[in-house]
Image (tube, rainbow, N blue to C red):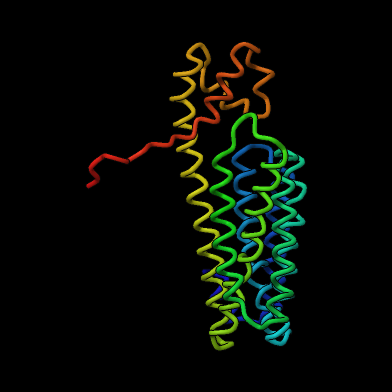
Length: 265
């Protein structure tokens, strides 16, 4: 929201360069951070700058490209974030690559198709359907799920994300007058990042609480804190072979409760 006001008051070029400088400053603080507190401060500064860069890039497209070409350019910019995150799966697990690549393909293809057909609403509907179906299928994963399913389900989900990630930004540029585009874009980016920052933490907290309960039930001899600190990719290094299947079961124990035959309300 701060960047919304800055882009509305000051020249776009100056504010955009200031956002880049702020991002670089935060990255520098992260690089030389002597403690976790300094690292957190550096990431906060870099995140503030990144928000300004993202909003500014969208405004540059809105001010420099004709309306019928903006979907393609916005799709390319959204795909850039997907390409940049390809390095993430190398650290977090190579099995995430199908999701990342399908997001990139979906963002680029939907941007080009919106430019050709001139309508973005069909892709918002397709995004909702594909993402809902894909994420529902992801909940069916089991420890013995085969490659074809965990790749295919991620592709469905990723295409849904890619189809819809830039369409609201296009809608803002279409329905709002140019003087309100900075405010609309900043508000949209704020809502997107706010939702992610809140509910990722909520989901992580819920997952850890459920994992602790299931570890007490399936593997009572283990300290849940040790398992959580080790992470899912290092379980075999800290858990004996005879206990490992029970720990994996605890990780996979997504709770499904039937309400059939029960009075609700």
